[in-house]
Image (cartoon, rainbow, N blue to C red; front, side, top):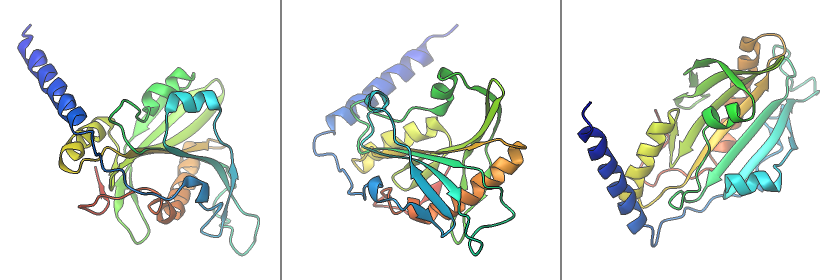
Length: 230
């Protein structure tokens, strides 16, 4: 078995990381609105409840800012969509102003199994945003005992929506060299499966589409491009 490709790739990776570290002085840290100001009411039909995270969890995540809430459709007859069941939707956004020192988002593919959840199904659906772009995200059905949940997640980094964590790391290296930025975030929407996964997916997509215009106000875009997807 030839070992030189692995050795060459290792040298390139170490060299690239060294270059990123050498550029860390004077890194551009974009200004952003605090998630504490994120609206509790979204699109006039979702009402939020603050959940928060325990201090010991925050010590592990090392986020610069985060959002952890549960949203539900309101009871107001003039705003509720009677085609959607009133299933609670959990929204987590973990934001890192810089990822140069090792503080970075944790992939759900690692942390969910670590918490006892088993991955049952995995897809990469493309979601059409209202009056906006189409984005590709991760759709994962997970199970723990008799409980099933549907998880929709993606990485939103410097104006890009990225499904693959490997592409996210690649773009981080590129943007560190070209924009002197490594800020990024993980966005995760979790919906309990009450009847069937497709029903949960319908609720999650409806929430995503309603939440999107507010979300992009709180996550910095690229200084060079608008939101793109991969």
